[in-house]
Picture 1 (spheres, rainbow, N blue to C red):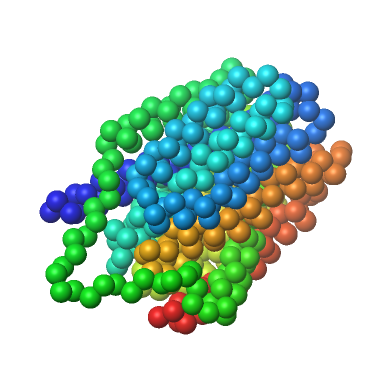
Picture 2: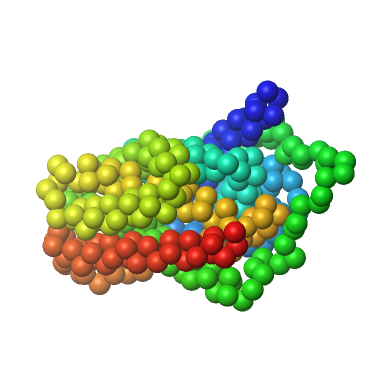
Length: 402
């Protein structure tokens, strides 16, 4: 009973931290035009670069963070990460110029990098037989963070300027970090049974060069999914404001619907995938690609339902892919393997914020036309379909390591 309570408490604390992590990651997206005006930036690309810089700083340190997650207290890593992330947002609210703002978002991204390697490895250890379902529940936190970030920032930004929601979210994050320290407990280490054989621990991440090649292939394939996912948020923001005349509040509210639907889909598909992991993951990715293709082509009253459908399917792919990856490796190296996985996918994928901003800039006067966005959305839909190759690679990896 005590062990069950510990697992449940740890799971929901990880879910709460997941919400904070992704809330900070997307809070600036509906504020692009307000930031551009405040700093006197020449184009949207400079404003969207703030999210790119945050995302790069978020993903690049993931492998070193994975090494730490395999060697030290995961509770301490999670607490320090959230505190750093939140403190950087407080500093960002007072940034006197664009260069200082870039430095603040880099610090915020670095703080966010503590979360995934430690939390994913921790949850996989606690739930070895229902990893998909457990990570699906943790994914509820991501959905709530992705939902609350843009809707709150857009609402407050329209009322009080972009700095006020950034400051308020930072303060809330600092309070959350303190509460986590007070409520979380250190991991329970399973007691060693006298006479039981020592578990076989891998000496290196991958036993053969072929396994490494397959893993890298999977990581690169999922870069396309991550690029599309990040790109939809930024492209959707600019599309809604330029082509449909949405303000920051309306944009934040609409974009938040991407993530609200995944509060339901993450645990549902996560649980279903514990029996048919690759089949269900392929299904949600194909459905997500279809929604991306349709989105810019529908009347304004259908924008919100289509975005919600996209989020329902797309976001559900993350806990399923993470569970598939965790199944292929030993617990002692899960932090490093997952850290390497999201370093590759996250770095390349999150270049999309800046690249999409530059792409929209090049549209010129065409940015106000709905049809001008068709090729960009179609490209992102194709990228999601390309990521299906990553499922084939993970399946091959699982069979070779079984």
